[in-house]
Length: 195
Ligand SMILES: [Mn+2]
Image 1 (spheres, rainbow, N blue to C red):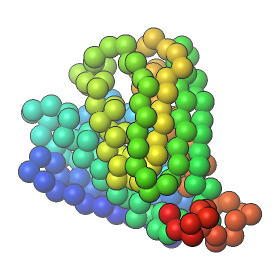
Image 2: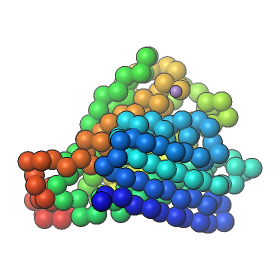
Image 3: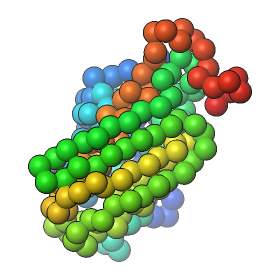
């Protein structure tokens, strides 16, 4: 079973994450940050990875620690659940339109964390959510998930659409990358013999 549970407790946040890579996109998010929950719902729904997130963070300061630490825990859970990566497709990509916005994601489950971030989110806030935290989330997720993660905004003007398109693009790309390729049997998808 490609599943993982991660718990992470610091003075700033207390987080538990469960993932099932071979799920159907069932989600159950409770981070205390409404817009972020809405985005994590998209990540699960469109990757078909079952994801449960429970987070209690220092929201009296701001949402920063909670969003970043959920990214860390989700990345760790992805790494654990992928294991030796036998048989996976490894690469994924998606052009995701959402009304005015279009975002492209290309990713590699390479164990070489790298974030390329070409996004221009048009407002600083979506309701009470700081839009700069979207990058913080993906940076943490890429670092701890061992993902070479490229996210490029092609166009768009509505912040909610731009950010949601980014989450959905990553989700769709991730779905393809984590899936087992039936032609690969259990081969590790690298000529190095390890990822
Ligand atoms: Mn929405």
